[in-house]
Image 1 (cartoon, rainbow, N blue to C red):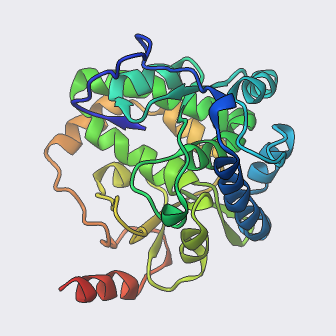
Image 2: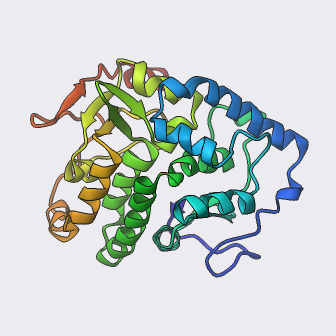
Length: 289
């Protein structure tokens, strides 16, 4: 939900929040939410980290229709001290980080149209709320999100938002997690996507590589299609520990002189779960040629 060079829309508060105006949603918009929810809820139980399904239950998100942010925030506040606030769309990086640092998750209030059911570039309420909010009911992941926001405010002062954004992308949006001998989904960009929920675990095309903080912050990512590489964390506890215990200043110093890694690179010292064929990415390039 973060961006740069944005102008605050008329009617939004100083922190870019707006009323959700839940009563204005149409029956068709509620029906779209229900359609999206039903197909993900059917697919995900065997694929997603159990904490995600627990969050759906804790927050009562299986109730029909687009969630009311006030009701959702009441339940979330009781669980982990977080709340959900509406914004008109993308917000500036520092506004985004400040909200996270204060345990507020910003969510767009619009929902995709039937023509956009499988893909839209700007995140909508289904991505933001279904994808992100259930794990905010998990205390450790909730702490990680706050720590990320605090780190983002520091990174902004050092001019390292690009590198830190990669950490968010490859964990919060497109992360995988170990569950015994299996891999499970937890990133919001995956769990809110019908196609990528299958692709990220089942397809031989992408790399699946063990998480390494500095490696992740060197790696480019795709915003227009399925990922060519997914990074696998051991646990939310380990992700939080690394975020809190790492001195990012020397990492930023080393990254300033380091060459960016391509989206499909596999390094000699990577922990490789899957060395992908990249067949999907190659086929997309050929079809575009």
